[in-house]
Image 1 (cartoon, rainbow, N blue to C red):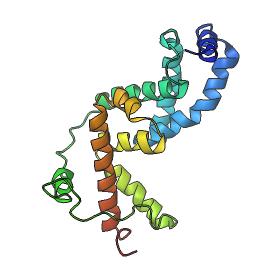
Image 2 (image 1 turned 120 degrees about the vertical axis):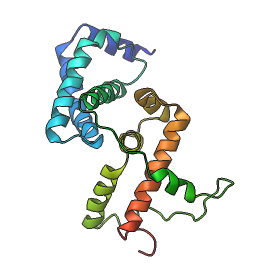
Image 3 (image 1 turned 90 degrees about the vertical axis):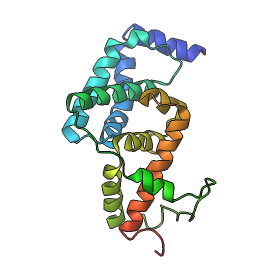
Image 4 (image 1 turned 180 degrees about the vertical axis):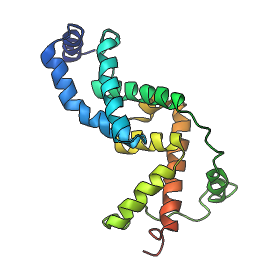
Length: 194
């Protein structure tokens, strides 16, 4: 660990008010945005953000400085989100996208039909509304992996640790999320031919 990370760790463990305030100021918006991206409404996202920083303060002695503070906070958020969902658990139906997903590939694993670029037409406000609808239609784990990898730009290894899946499975979940988003947007008319 380099000297600056060691110094940060020591200031955090000493509960330096300036350092703690800086972390909250720097990362509160990111944590809130990530909570929203994980599918929570405004009130729940605010509650989760507060829970994350409370837990951070309670567990600060366990912070070893090997990861960035942002990654540590997002890991806490993910665990808090899982806890919140367990208390409100409802059974998710089987994922019907698996059959659709398989139909997009040949027996050799190649694209049966190469997908169109999903970013075409994003400048249209209606597409953004459609994209939001499509994101919320994803299965929870696919939506979470998509958000953590694409929006928060965390590494596959960091997401793997957070969601408790292998790095390879994180890649599969991300691919399936992208495929479902592409299919959903195509059905809304924002895919091929536009």
